[in-house]
Image 1: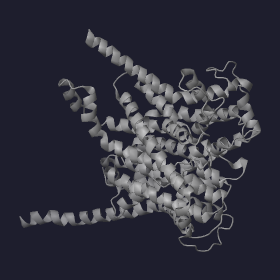
Image 2: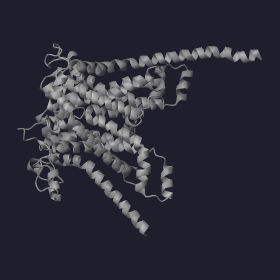
Image 3: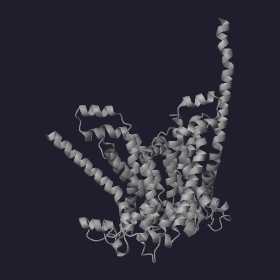
Image 4: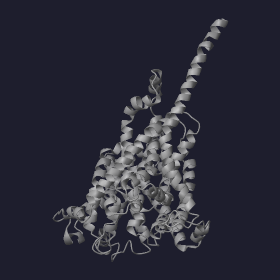
Length: 279
Length: 312
């Protein structure tokens, strides 16, 4: 009986802990949604449900600044960066994961080292490069500079997946006279599709969230990406930030990400740990 | 007999020859496959890094980057005697050590809860991924609103519970603002920590736990004597990985307190010199120093983590 009571008590403690963790992780986002649906003076009261939900903040964010353009910029940059990174790293990860050659460890170490680069460490050199190529205040400038963190990441994760491909498949293909390129595209790529999706999604999130380069290499309002636009939303005066608008913008750019992450949660967790724990 | 024993060798010679030819072909293909990637990495990582280190020895200005004088170590000397730079170094390390410590403790706790074999853990995993998925800028703005001294929900909640008697200026109070930043970072990255630790926990052998249960050892003792030593390698890797990330913090500080010296990190300092003051020389010197700090930790990560560079 007492054993059973103890079991129930520990069960209850467990669920209290679960509730606390969920409240802690979800509340700030919940509060952003609630705040974004409040209009006028409601915003300054602490009602935990919007008393009279209004969409005014969601329309004014598009009227007061080129927010649709900012979203488009972010989508263009993040999608191109993902496509280019994956395209380059499919063949590179095959070479690094499945072919023995001298200097491979050194190359992998270099890739890992580059993925740890603080972006600030290359800021002035990158600024010069972007301006020299005539890409200052243009989206290709961001696509180019984002390669510094997406490319090492996609190479590293795809290399760990490439290593796990069954050897027999490759040998059988070689027996049939397949070239390395055919092995990659005909044999491995179909098997790697889930890994590519996960890696691509993680690289997309990284590019979508990037701030420092986007803040430094873009000049005009129309060229800004979403994080910069949200960071620089300003009101009538310095002391009067339009919090309703800021929260509405935050919800707009976060909801799709959260939806994607919740749909692919199992894969994301395995992709993240492949990127860090395994190596 | 002699014929029989020699015939396989005769047959094998062309096979070996063919195999080595195949290997050579594969190695050649590998380099061809790697070439475009290596060119891109040299262009976007190697070259800008070298140029940044180079600019650290010059007096270049942002508007006229192609005409400069060599000042050699003058920029480094200027940093050495600039209290603002040392403040930034201190802030960065204080922030990194405190926030990563809290994240490790909380992450361990969340990971243990997620690892328990009870219904409801799927829900936590979903909830925990939300802060991780939100862009840092957005999470900083969300907290910035909650921190608002007059209308912020945080002050109202704390006053309702009775922890504080009057509103606190979270981001304006020089003693509190660094903690405001730490709180945002902890909220945002504890999930990542928890997931990494969880991955370590799930690789533990179940036999130890069954043996401990049979022997009737208290779960707390099992945790400290069995679980903690076994997951220490995974924990170390996660901690160093997060430290590397924390040392380059920029986004959250930029949104919450901007260029305020009380909370300025090394990244904020370097960018302010470079962009706001147009001083490419000092900005690059500061960047280079930050790069050296992080390189040191990267070496630590690779050695402590015993990163797997060969096959399996």
